[in-house]
Length: 405
Ligand SMILES: Cc1cc2nc3c(=O)[nH]c(=O)nc-3n(C[C@H](O)[C@H](O)[C@H](O)COP(=O)(O)OP(=O)(O)OC[C@H]3O[C@@H](n4cnc5c(N)ncnc54)[C@H](O)[C@@H]3O)c2cc1C
Image (cartoon, rainbow, N blue to C red):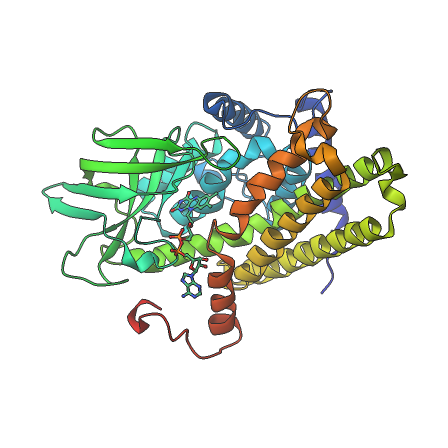
């Protein structure tokens, strides 16, 4: 497989780079941006940037022009995602569920009305989405979902609780998986709703994480009247849709994240060159040199795995279960690279901000945030089960109810 770009694709990358340089401020520091301590600022920064992307003709690169996209190739979409991952990951990160899950799901599975209603608003930055899958008793086992949606005329009445719902406190819409058949068990009887978060009866309550910030929420649904037109796919098809959404989430993530991690390694090398630990320049320490090299190797594995997965995506239109390999390739190495960065700092590793912190305390934040990487979007154990069963064809995980797998 040849991963080199065509001359036209190289020119497109250069043009987009130039646009990014002109659009991001001259003193732009991707590691020193608004945090979830300022949720409105995070949301507004994302919206303003997405609007500029849209006005410049860079939003929804490979989506149909009829819905506000650019009608270009998936490879050009990958190029734009890589450049944004490299230069401004913190700005585009709040849109990860919006663009990695809501957009492809609505595009491939929505009705014509849903596509016209939602896609242009996603692409111009007006709408941010969150993902309501997990519940107190349904995390790895999504099929255990108990939030109920009972049909009442032209509405579903939704009651129940979601948890770990990232960005629900400032999202406009939610991809909500509910149980529409009260007599069903496991994956049967689940449905998928596109829910307006401003509807009466929806109550997101932010939860503080190890970073000290509230990025995710508990979300309570109390007799929420959701129009039946919000159903995506057929009633009872929610399980299939949920799996498809998760595959999109994993495939898109590899491309953006590997680009962002390349920037992280460059930053780590800069730190190693300027930091001393026990009087010795860190960059001369053979152990750290090995760790930096190992991190780079792991990022390259993620990058080329992501591109390989995309080449099969281009052929079939839908990403495959190989996305689970990518999930392991970004989450576990990110924990190692942030641990290396903390070790390198020696005693200064304990200082998370202020004049005595190294690189603005950004590694301390990244180290704490990385702990969630091996849990969010499916835990490492679950990814290994998926790889075993669906990629390698090994026997099914005996600990799980056969009807759920
Ligand atoms: C930062 C962050 C953001 C998140 N954002 C969202 C979001 O926006 N929307 C959303 O819906 N969810 C979100 N989640 C939730 C996430 O998807 C779940 O936490 C995850 O799927 C695990 O579910 P659980 O927490 O219920 O753990 P459990 O499923 O209870 O798992 C507990 C432990 O048991 C292991 N385990 C479970 N089943 C098996 C098995 N069959 N074989 C081997 N080991 C097993 C797991 O790997 C884990 O170590 C987020 C989580 C985090 C940390």
